[in-house]
Length: 300
Image 1 (cartoon, rainbow, N blue to C red):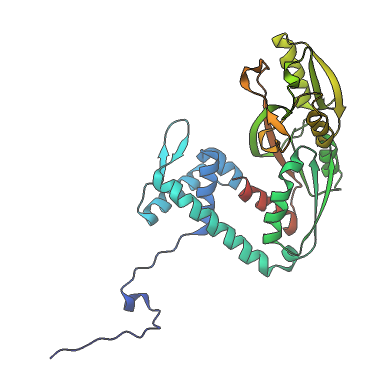
Image 2 (image 1 turned 120 degrees about the vertical axis):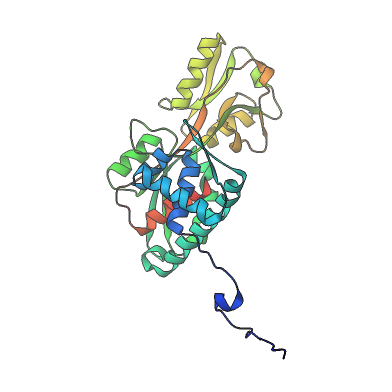
């Protein structure tokens, strides 16, 4: 006698469906993302305020759960396998969704104000940051002030702002490196100021570490130069360079219309890289913490 067994279409019983359900632990995923970012169990444990052995056990547990080898361990560093790199993108998405879900239920995260201090150089990233934060916390007001790195850090120390997004540490400890990119020599798209002698320069006002680095490099290379324009903001520098009267330095991502990166055969010295650093007040409230998490996701 033949018997037909039917399962209701709306059944959610895994046993009835013959499905073995597995769930990823978000706490383990958060540790995995930190290991992937730092390439080190030790540094990941420090940032997570856990013991190194605990993080190592979490990674072992994650590999057992997924059935994949996700990390390649060596004496000096930890690298992702192909499966680990594949999992990383999902881990970040799951954590972001988790944070967004919790944030959406927390009125403090949905309303209020976040005070951020930025520098003129870090302003090139601000539109991306504000767009990402608006998606996460659309009702939070962002109050942003622009000045020099040391001014932003002083305001942070004085409690006038919640976060400082700067490009030089100015002797402060505790900052987190968000982004690093090359600085490049830049000239007008319509003029070759780099061919003139002495080299005409447009640079930030004294006190900028990148200005000091450029002058040291030029002096060490024996290239004669003259300062034709000094400004506290990048708009003034861009205007001088676009006019064809000088060359300047800027992050490669900031080179816009009317400007060009000077070719390597122009004989100009190598430049340092630009660091984008985040400083956050101790024991931040929900809003500033959410803003910082947005930055961590955006620049991961």
